[in-house]
Amino acid sequence: MSGNEAWAALSPHEKRRERFARWLAPGNVQFSSPEAEEAYKTRVTRFMRAISLEEPDRVPVELPVGYLPAYHAGLDLKTVMYDYKELTRAWMKFVNDFEMDTFSGPGLIYPGKVLDLIDYQLNLWPGHGLADDVTAIQYVEGEYMKADEYGAFIRDPAGFLLTTYLPRTTRAFAGFRKLGPMTNAISIPMGFITQYGDPEVRESVQKLLDAALETMKWREAVGEATRAVRAAGLPSLSGAMSGAPFDRMGDTLRGTRGVMTDMYRRPAELLEAMERIAPLLIEQGISGANVSDCPVVLMPLHKGAGGFMSNKQFEAFYWPTLKKVMMAYINEGLVPLAFAEGDYEPRLDIITDMPKASVIWKFEVMDMAKAKKTVGAHACIAGNLPVSIMCTGTADDVRRGCRKLIETCAPGGGYILSGSAHVENGNPDNLRAMMAAAKEYGIYKK
Figure 1 (tube, rainbow, N blue to C red):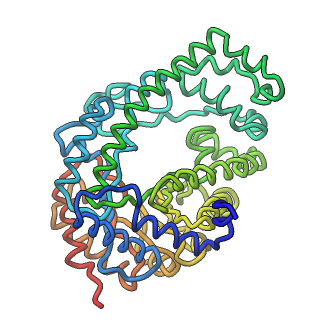
Figure 2: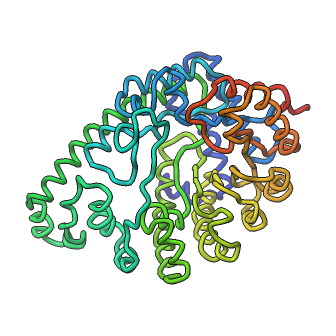
Figure 3: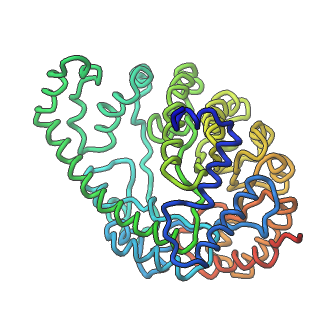
């Protein structure tokens, strides 16, 4: 039996046990000291027990760190987007200056030089459409897939993305609109090859190569910082990233207005397109997790909150394909971390429909007492100290807020203390206050 066949023969529980073992003892991490290795194992065990709805030694903490390492190092977002050495330095300094249970490398700090090279249109960032001192990246809303293009997308998602979507959203790839279908490569591929001789196609290919070389430099810096994070004994709480099929349609293809009106005007096409997207997301998450030691798949959920749609619409358009993707991960031994952005209180009874102790639900806007009684009886929950307190409150405000969350959500296990969202720039002492609160109020008595 081959390795793939042996893996396929395992049950979801057995697969998760194997992935948890790999998370606990990663083979490719060179720890900086025996103490760092021991601390790493203690932290991973803390998260594994919380995920399994058991009581660890204390409540685990996910500090709400976004771009804060850049500002803590005396830099800004623009600098670390364009200067990879400074990016690495900032992340290493943050590791040395803060106690944490989990921390990720700077893989979500996108390389400004690459975005410039490809002339990316979906975002504005400091120094490119935004002032140099802006602390965030801004999304540019639009309909990058037209309403009458559902059929083309459903027939050939890859072809549509390459020849229609990319030329619209990434100007460097405008020449790709001339490319024919990949099926032209079947048999003797002379026509398929010839099209790459077109001057506009050649120009786009060259820009893609230039961007690839710059991306490799960025990846090297990200890899260096990430290795330093692991070496210090800090595990990641995200081994891959995925999302909901509805959000994939609404975020970057149809746009928010487009996807919302499609629920009324083109419901059958929207549902079919999401079914087409689901296997692609499943493969994306599994592939990413397979090259990571962490079995958790982060799934930011953008458009399923109360206010965007009714419960009836949520159950018809959002939940079925999201659940399909999540169940595929669970069956592969992975743990979806669903970050429920916005108000998910109307969805509590719906989202409990998952295997017990299989998911982490992180809430942004939520009555956490209600979440504990409903979803928390079946799944690990996380959240949700408001960003407003983290950014503008005092350390005492943070400690009081964390204490209330711990007293509400921690009993019996299955809780991760976290913020409602990431802090991009704020008082670093409030991060220390969050850790201190967990150590003071979150100890489980044996």
